Length: 216
Image 1 (cartoon, one colour):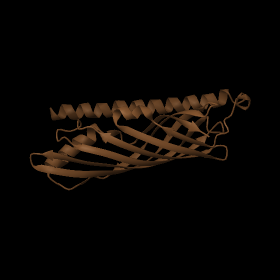
Image 2 (tube, one colour; image 1 turned 90 degrees about the vertical axis):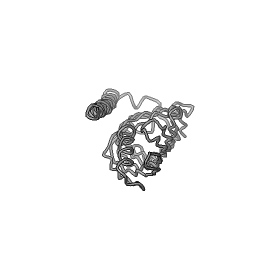
Image 3 (cartoon, rainbow, N blue to C red; image 1 turned 45 degrees about the horizontal axis):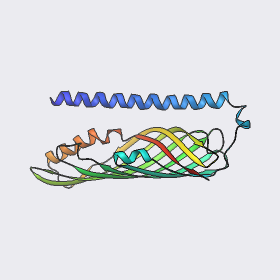
Image 4 (cartoon, rainbow, N blue to C red; image 1 turned 120 degrees about the horizontal axis):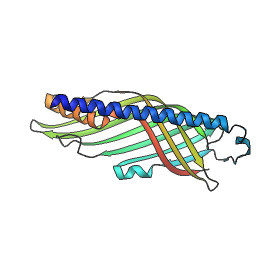
């Protein structure tokens, strides 16, 4: 049974990683193709004068995920994003009824191909994320922290309407490094936390955004 469960976990990771890879490549291809095919038309299209955009992710609230970010444009093409995330994690990822929450700060550089904020972009991001949790086993209570650092690449598209309303979509993936710190070093506690890590935090390298906001 353990071998079967591990096999399912591995296949689940592979499928989701493959999906993320294909989605990221597809978005990059669309952005490149659009930039090339509409190069002459870009000068005729309305270009937002906005230099700053404030966004939130309303869809994540239903899953206990709260995220907000601000992007400022330097020059015509260089955007810098500061983002904060808060996660409230349900107790369904471990038999130890782990109660956990996560916080993250992300710094993201974006190069806007079309010039201005309302364009396709590609860039790099760095994220510091920390999950804190506690649980209970027959051997007693335990608590832990799981700090993580991620560095990766992302692509996306921002749309801005003349009213200032803005919609942003982005996908990214990177290399994530985390280090478990637990106050109860029993094997049962470590096993419970590892189950939690496999079921919840295995997509550590993923960065996504589907947000709305206001640009000015």
